[in-house]
Amino acid sequence: MNGNNNALIIVDVQDAFNDPKWGERNNLNAEENIGQILTAWRKKGWNVIHVQHKSENPSSVFYPKNEGFQIKEVAKPFDGEVVMTKTVNSSFIGTNLEEYLHAANIETVVIVGLTTPHCVSTTTRMSGNLGFDTYLISDATAAFGMNDQVGNYFGPEIIHNTTLATLNEEFATILNTEQLMKTINEL
Image 1 (tube, rainbow, N blue to C red):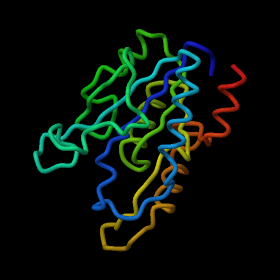
Image 2 (cartoon, rainbow, N blue to C red):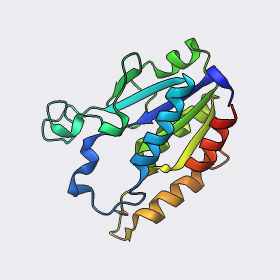
Image 3 (tube, rainbow, N blue to C red):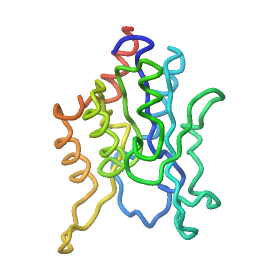
Image 4 (cartoon, rainbow, N blue to C red):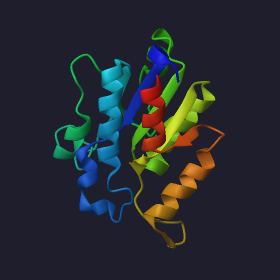
């Protein structure tokens, strides 16, 4: 990481993930860690990009007229920060994120948000594939437990850690909040 060529991408930190329908979750302090990173990032004056998931389905928790669409208080955008809306898992599809990053001469991307195996993973993979020096912060994202195609349940910690393992050193460098904060404070 180096100064103004860094961008923090905050993916889908929305009230929709408070809905009990999601089930068991790991990293219950992910939002707290996101808030800590965001505060440090803002103090440095670096680029902050908020990505918000939007569903066209009125019954979805991500539908714009439903409460869940709102960005959580801990990650509320400040005036002047970029907010992009997406309708698929990747923050790069259907948005101008890639163009924005290139126009701002961003080389390094730090990704946080919800959820690890879905939008965070997809955004991280694309960021790495597009050539950005990509970092994913392991304890500033979270996963929910889920069933596989034959009904086997996998807890949130297994889902989270397996997803991180598939991304590590191929698409991104995986750090935790403490490691990232140390790096930020050294710059």
